Length: 216
Image (cartoon, rainbow, N blue to C red):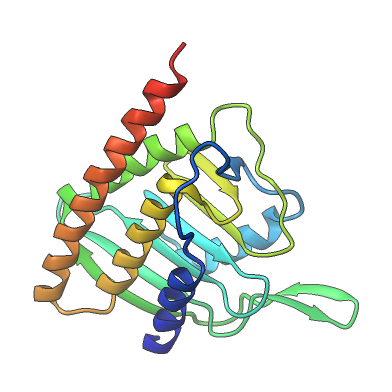
């Protein structure tokens, strides 16, 4: 699991844009599922959920290699939430000759840790706002032959390509922090929650600016 996590973090750093270009950068996300992706994505999400209903999830369907996912699962009694990072034991999307199969009879590698309810609920609220602005009502999720990014916040589903621009960088930064927290002890996790709060503060400022620029 540590090796997979390291590869994910390295990949996000290697392809990070060198500069912001708000006037030319497009966040390629839309509502719903990308074309020809729903059956595949549903299979992976169910594999990672293990019967639970997450309040927030992010799933990466890569062009090659194992699928990964982050889930936030609320405690119905109001206690700490569960933060889960999952990696498929073997790639779910599999061509058996000319027939596509979904290999869901497997046990994914899972890292699961408690997350303070206040931090988790704020993350859900802020991501829902971010995704609503990034993919307004009526937008459609674009298809990609490369990686597909799937976000779900409550009843809101937003999907598409790797999110870019300042907002995309902030979402990716938060995903990295969550992945790191899922594999750390309590003391280090506390540091990640503080970093996450700071990143969410910056994202709120970005969203406020975006809302102002798009206001009639």
